Length: 263
Image 1 (cartoon, rainbow, N blue to C red):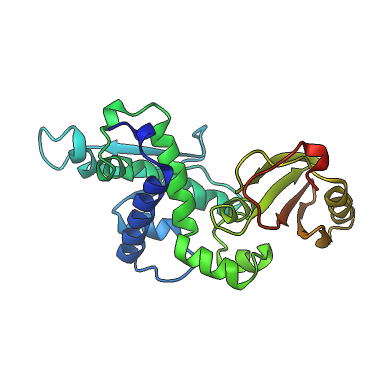
Image 2 (cartoon, rainbow, N blue to C red; image 1 turned 60 degrees about the horizontal axis):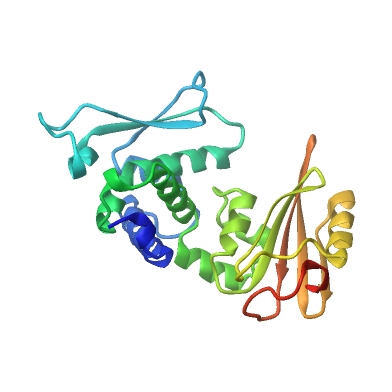
């Protein structure tokens, strides 16, 4: 079977099941998830190499027995994760979580009935990214705590401190509450997505004015318009200004009309 033939919901279920097994194996039963601890439970050695160009890389070396060089036996190789030191611990956590996804990709392909040799070159990277996100922010914990705190970003960051603010915000869209998440860097939108069908409208005037106040003041902001609610959380550093916006929407099936009349 080809990966493209499998609904993403089925892929996510397989990843979440794998994450559940990983967390139990590592003895992690509540947030936050430490990817280094999970790697250790898998028998992966995490080493630092500040000379490498990439943030992290996964290296297999040696075999448990002669001739084991393909299929699921690939998983029996001794493996290490090399990471470049980063001042932001969340980046190191993501790097290790991603390489754990690389390590488990063959096993995930097998659970989905997919031959890795027939998967497109990007499939392994896609699985690794999705596993990393769901490992640092497990579905059940993140969904329950997100709903309990009304998807308040600072509150979620306290609980899941090994994940970045942006990862937390993006992960919100994997749950049912209709919303748009926007990431603004240096007063330019770098990412804007919704969990509703279709493409979200451009930032509306009422959203823009609330965002600008938070950008200038460095303080969180909130506003309401026609049943929608917008919250802005500044994540400012001395040399960089980022704001993360969550716009909660009235229930609707999909975006209708053009961008000018979306609100």
